[in-house]
Length: 296
Image (cartoon, rainbow, N blue to C red; front, side):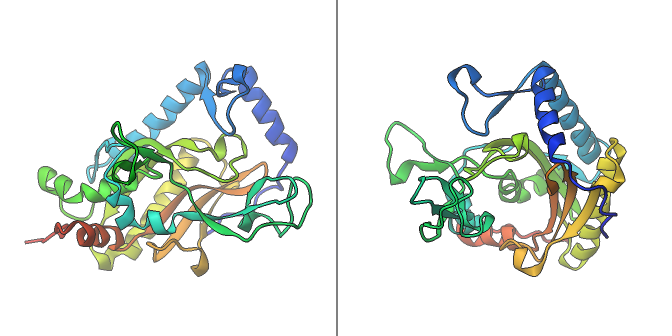
């Protein structure tokens, strides 16, 4: 259920917040003395403390105050077959177009056949652009040494599902949570620190019997919405927005976003998705290792 729409966006507020963050020592452009690097920021003294408070508040609510969630800390670099199995290599893409006039690049689904910079309509055909950062492991660069910086933390929880269930003697319903860095090579990052190429994610994967998944998704939607209200965000500036069918990711049978009314309009704070058994089944098929849980 969505909350009331709230007041209209105020674009001038955005500039005021950005300027205040720098003056007070919350956020600085990264390597500013060298001209910076687009959409990359360093958190100053107050910003670093603010981030720690947010991490600890999430950790406390999602792990320490619950007896059905355990933490892990998976590696940023992992076997590239993980991303093949998860579908990231094939589907984690945005449509990229180039403006032949000013040479700028844009996401095709965010512009209306017109370059936002110069107004030209002379654009290339859209082509898929994979959002994962590619790197190489070891001293030799080649196809056999390709690796990727993780674009999400969830896959580390899926490939460790059986390890965690066995060592903690947990049985569904139970959750695995972690907090850590993720990286996405966005075509057009922006909106200050709310869309960057390097960021911190807080994720929970909650494993339940398939028949119970709709009930648990509804539970987590309400639980997560109340968490933001608990820490002082005005309820009228929050809403739950279910995804339309055409919006759904390849792994999801239903997704709802917790959205906040930013100065530029409504935007996602987090998503709650019913991922079915897609991830566990995909990793089981690609690895040849059983990830099935048998409840005796």
